[in-house]
Length: 119
Image (tube, rainbow, N blue to C red; front, side, top):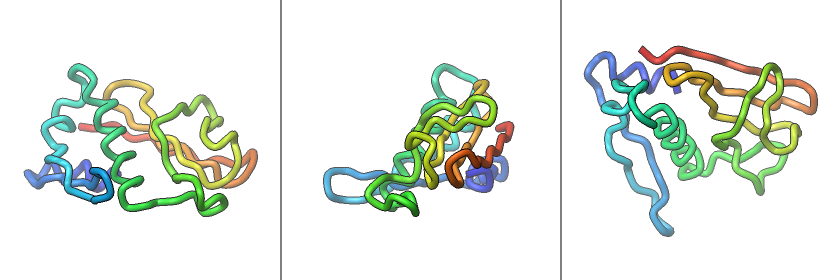
C-alpha cells in the first residue's frame, strides 16, 4: 500500500481494481484523494478503495480461504479486530486522517502492526 501511495508524490497514478457485478474493472485514479488525505472523508475512502482492490483480486485469508484477507476494521494497541482474532486477517485502519494502520493477525494472539503517514 505504501509504495502505491508514494506514486502520487512522483506524479504517477494509482489505479486499483474493484468488482462490478461479476467483472473486475479499474477504479479511477486514487491520487486526488491521497493528495488531500486529511480533507473530508478521504482517508476512509483511500482505505476502502484498497480493501475493494484486495477483494477484487481475490486476496483470501490463507488459513480460512473462504474469507477475504482484508477489511476496513479496527486496530487498537496490539489487537487486530478481524476474523475474531484468528490468523490470516488484516485490518485497514486509520488512527488519524493522515496515518494508515495495517494490522494483521498472524496467528491467535500474534499480530503485526504497521503504521505510516501519508504525505
